Length: 206
Image 1 (cartoon, rainbow, N blue to C red):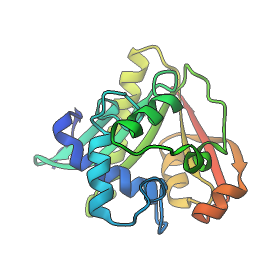
Image 2: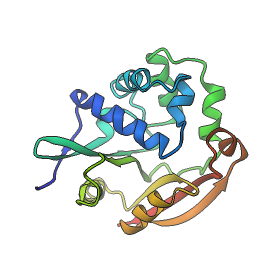
Image 3: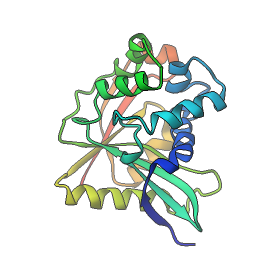
Image 4: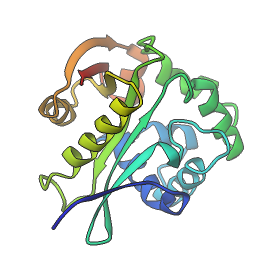
């Protein structure tokens, strides 16, 4: 079966929501959106994430930042790539406000406590996920190759991603795709909320 890569549209919002939730939990009981939406009810979280992908404010969760991998017309994986100078903390706050998720400054503190002060001309990757049952068939590699090709055409030469310290599966996957770890930030607040020591910044030059 061949893998086709396409740009996500608003009609893909439910699948994007599923992949965002899967990515944010990453094997933990609670992820960022469980915390922000104050619930572990998947139905409620997915409904809110669907809306978050289609807000007027183009946060990093907006559908326009996503590529989708398809096999036999079935969506099987996602990769988000965004520019931190555009998808800012402020745009994320505005997007949350649009879906009536307000007064989140305190909860978002855990997200920004590990601040890497990203280069605004670096492309960021996030939500690289594949559906269960489609592991090891080249989905993520195909998504990454397409993203890097597009990024190069836009003039980018460095891309980065942030993963959790101790997330060995993600670390091995990104290293396999050519990324290297450049910095770690341990954070007591992050450990307290999610049981992980902090975050790791990985980078690739292309």
